[in-house]
Image: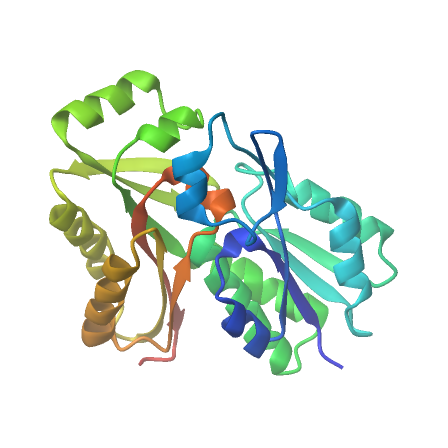
Length: 277
């Protein structure tokens, strides 16, 4: 038996990739205009365009984590959640693990989206290789400490609306035509120097990755986007041409993430030491 790896839908893993790696994904929740839905059942563009009032998001209920853990094999599960600084999902997963019949290790990845997805895939690879639950958990912790995520948003409108940045900053960004860049690492958002156009914003993301390049290690990369599939595809093409990644995928933001960012494109990566590509 192998260890089962479980995550939440904020990891932005493509469904076929999660299925191929035997990863169980538990859906987060959204509420707006008197409606409730599971993450993944809502069209992102329609939601951003059509919601009359605020959209609230929440983690999966503890019972769904408990059910996922109960469905794990005899070796139990490792549950990898979005950063606890962004969501109550980690606490919900801990409650679910206490109620489950199988043993489980619950880990706050300290990140989200494609970066969280890379942590999940590394853990899934360890599990597929026969690692114990403790070993899978240790791999996840190591990758979570290494993974980087840098992204550019079209504007601060949605971040202001969700309370992530002050309203005056959003107004200034709109007036100046800036494309804000940020890094999310260790559970904290760090604002970077904004770009003065779309192409400059993508170049800014690439510069961050190039500065971190390690020719003596294997590259694992995820391109992430919200409503910008063409930008994401072009970004991945450039990365694959320059970096020859061992792991690469495009992760589309689900609605529960996109309502807080609006249109976005970014890059997550980590380097595996001692295994040059």
